[in-house]
Amino acid sequence: MSRFQFNKTKTSCRTNAAKTKTKEEERSWSWSSCAENTAGFMKVMMVSRWVLLLFSCLLLYSLLTLPQLRSIRCAYHQWAPDPISSRLIVTGAGVRDDKFLEVPQIVWGLNNQKIALARAALTARKLKRTLLMPNLSASLFYKETDLLEPLGFDHLFSLDRFNSLCNGFVRISSMNSGNFSDVFVVGKGSGRRWTAERDMAQLEQCKTPDIDRHTVIKLQGKHPFLWHDHWPVLDYARVFECLVLVNNLSAEVSRVVSKLKSLSFPAGIDQNKIRMSPFLFQPKYVAVHMRIEKDWMIHCKKLEMRSRARNGKNLRICSSKEEIMKRVANIPGLEKPSVVYLAVADDLLEDKTLLEGWSGFLAPYEKKKLGVLDIYSKYPYLIQSAIDYEVCLQADTFVGNSFSTFSSLIVLQRTMRMNRGRDCEGSTMASYAYNIEGSVGGPKRWATNMSDLSLDAISYGSNEVSCM
Image (cartoon, rainbow, N blue to C red; front, side):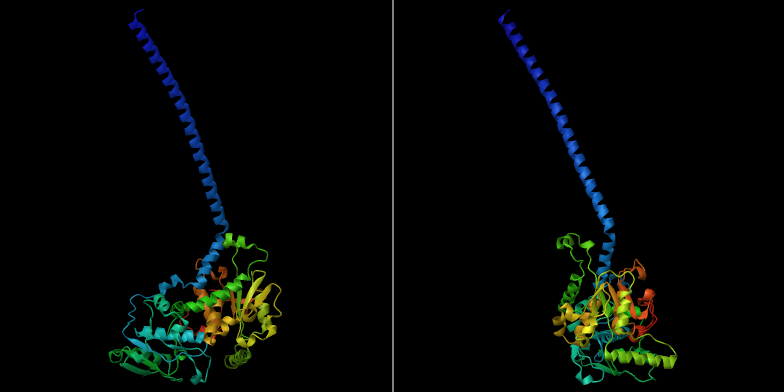
């Protein structure tokens, strides 16, 4: 064999060996790639299973906590102005910001003043004018008007929030008539001959060009609570929803409510569990507006006697402490135990028997026992009452007297904020009238009739309460 043939054969052998090695490497890479693909597929399947399991757990959790979520939604309505009530705003109402109405100082109790304020604002709306900021009364005097302590509207309620929430419906200006020289004075009529028809005719006259051309119309005479009522309940409710306490007073309310809720947590529950599952641990409390003061008992008994003499009707107005305690204990479905906040006048705080005699599953607290007396004592009467009002408004269950303006206005706002997806009987914001007996010896279930054409039932009380 020649050297050339030998080299060619050698080269050919090397080439075949290289090809064989390459095929083996390709076969090895193919098996390796297949194994890697299989491992990747298994990882994807494993992740998918975990995702599916996690989704199933979340779905189950949401189903279990749905009732608590609904309660949270209702709790929102307890403190936030109701956005649905914006349906009451009539756009294009024409409330002018260069024409104004001034009213006399607003007096009497907190809720008499709130009604008077709303009536003044609705009167200004009727005249398509902005209401000049009225003075409220910090002190409580019924006859000694010279002793009344004026309190600016913006010292109790937020002016910006009011105008924002009531935008397009009514408006209040921070100015007063002293800022203007063009003021037209109108005397409000009084007495039996001054009927609602004459009162409305006077308002219509104020809209005529001769009077309407003036920058300010100043109404003089009796204060607005005593004016004739021309407005439906829904209009008043819209104004009440715009009355939001100023920030520092809202913070005081939160302090009182937080103390009540902290007492409502079940004993022995780990705080970490509460933080991890807030939906499962919703603290609740009951608020009772107790009208058992001596002056109230004298007043309500006179009303009952007068009703029997004039109409032959037996109005149920007065309730003793024992009757109130018994009826609160008989509220159907009330949680056991329950924290009960007693909204009472300051002169009852020294009455030690106030906290005695309650059913064993009810834990009563008033300002002194709750440890919040220092919050109230630094403010005048009107602000103390406003804090108590909000504490009662935010309660899960409220019990009051249907002839008390304080109780009636709370029920009105609670009716506005109910969960509209459920009827009154199923609402979590339950309200009751303890002066009227309901089922199983408990108080009568109570909701405001929002279709009433006047506020008379709220201003002066009624036995005609129901859950509508």
